[in-house]
Length: 151
Image 1 (cartoon, rainbow, N blue to C red):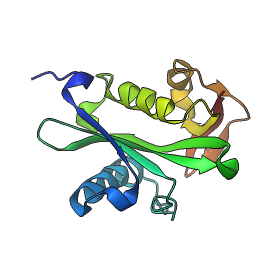
Image 2 (cartoon, one colour):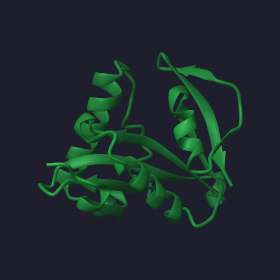
Image 3 (cartoon, rainbow, N blue to C red):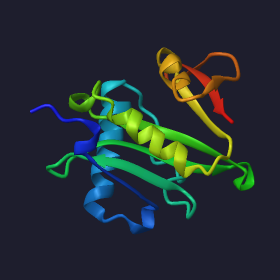
Image 4 (cartoon, one colour):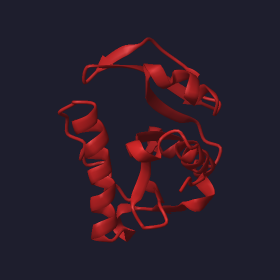
């Protein structure tokens, strides 16, 4: 069966409102993508997930499986937002799901400037959503990234 983004349930909540199974599924997806698939041993659980102002967004498939996730952080004393930990399970890539989740995240940022650090090969994808490269390419955990900003 081929699913479209409309077939998924999008949810936004701070960590304090997540049940343990949902948070575990989101953290597991991040681990599967960043640590296992991309072979980057790094501290994903960095203390920012539990900040009162951090919002977690995720897309659940009809069976309840967490298919994609990202988080929004408050930066610059609340005057900007940072989108990060953008991850989609392999089986759900390429159907527009993350684009739908990213558009939702952008709308939740209230028109404030948004920063992110994109993997270099995804720069053009983020540009489709209005992000612009704002600095030099850099190496993080063995993967080339570029700083980007919207607004």
